[in-house]
Length: 227
Image 1 (tube, rainbow, N blue to C red):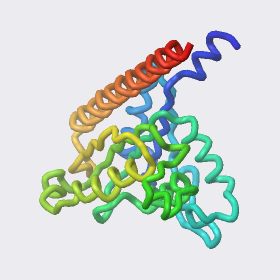
Image 2: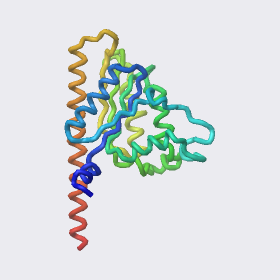
Image 3: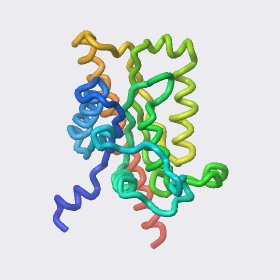
Image 4: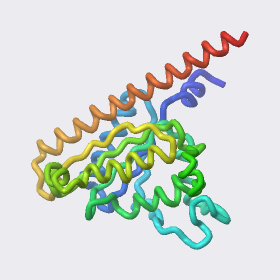
């Protein structure tokens, strides 16, 4: 194996799950800004644009998580991306107080395909997702202050972000929200927001890289001690 191939195998990978139907939307710009910053840090990053992919969010008979009679090709493909990821990133708009159905469908069909109610009850983490970082970037037409007054941001953090990291055994890498995202936004505001995305991405890259380095160091010490 060449040194370049070895580097590719050890490179940190980010998979960005994008859930917005309109090409060129603010959410699309967020996903691209995140990937740009990750790549500038020497990491790999790929966007899974669920609407562009035509991802079906609906569970079908015989495909209930943990009780599937088989795995569909689209779910198998997504599991391939998730298996290779070190960081999973959600990018979506908040609609009617919750993530869009296509994002929830991705959780139901792809991330949770092998998880049973017993796994959740017994806090048995998913073998593919355990230890990976989960970050979220969301947007809303209303302001963050309004969402906080309604208790909606805390509700999403509790019912979605923290719940998912808990049942899948993932690491919470934070949730950055942008409010007042509407048509005709000031270009300077958009630019500042995307700079914040890039800064957040760099911070995530740094933390994940440090965690990997620490893990390798612990492994080396354990191997040395076993000799």
